[in-house]
Image 1 (cartoon, rainbow, N blue to C red):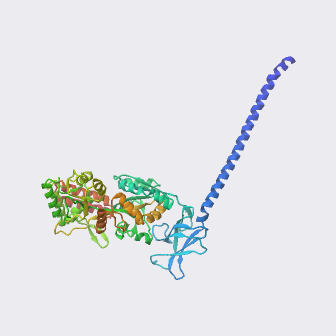
Image 2: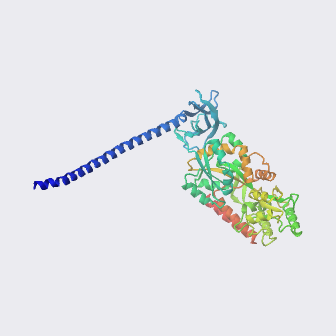
Image 3: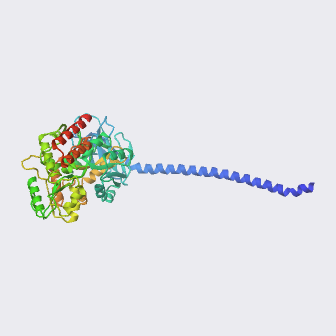
Length: 538
């Protein structure tokens, strides 16, 4: 029996050894896990420490920049800015705000391109007198540090780093043109900008929905008649410009982007409907609409052209394009006062406006057949570019096609009906408007105001789009230069929140008359519909 036990001992000892090995292995795993946890925690703590150190070092210069409201020894109001660091800061903007305001929407803005380090603060006087000398003011300041990082110290002293990315939504034409400046903008300011094309068919409803749900949208570029609706939907914020930046843009263009005394955008391109003339077919500009029509009909009778002139109408109507013919024959939409458009007085059903619509009907499908619903934008431009008509009434978006076709062209105002004192034509301003909820809208406001204020930038934009821009310079292209002059001589279209519906009513009215309906009936119905729009929301 003892011998049997001894014989089984190796198996028993082998089992014990295996068990001990398993125990030691388990202990080793536990120890390894604990060691790994300790090391991981140490790495995490070290990473946090490094991150805090990096942040401290990144903030080290910015933390030494301060600004406050005060008066110079001579009693002049303004901003004191102190750079207590050892390196200069750049592109500094100081916004002076009333103490009771929390946001930067109201105030006065001053700038200084470079603030060098100094033991004493510099003084930046305000360009406009402060209404209440004793009022308490706060100062918000933004600047770029020596390493190229942009910062904001708000009016309560809180310092935060601004993101070096700006996203702008625009239609295809302006997005493509502005995208040419991405690299130069980044090299100039150290900020990447993305221009996202949203197509020419982007609607106001889709735009406001995207601005409300996508926080990365910092600005949009669209015509100024959208401003009223965008304000009403809290989609855009006011724009503050320094005196130097305001001076870089025509005052009329800034007024077009202003609602209730607040500016809502920076001018980019501008536009109006004008008369494009093929100088080979019509060497002289017509003085009246009758002369234009007579010249066109004579060329048509001689077999040199297919129709006297072209104008886009389309199935849905193009009221901005048709407006010069309507206004030039005496038609009016709203009464005007020194304060601007008065939507409480709708003038579509007046005798003068009915006469203007009768003029359109005579040119339409029940009359000469020159104005037709079958002629859309592409067809109207093609008629002119192919030499099949001597005249084209169009906005400047036709110019690229005309230049590409090599048509000798001159631009002038669309002449009015002889003996009629017509309204000025509508002018549109495409403004870069700041998204109310954009993460980088402060950066967009500061840097785009500076960038677009440069003549060389606006001149390059003008050449890219072959269209006028909202700047003081005169384009080198004579045709575009004339568009620029006509824009300044025109009247910015209204920007009420109801303008989308107003344009739709005008389009239906004009299409109905061009199709042959009674002008007085169409005018009366349109006037009533528009009156209801403004009564309902007034």
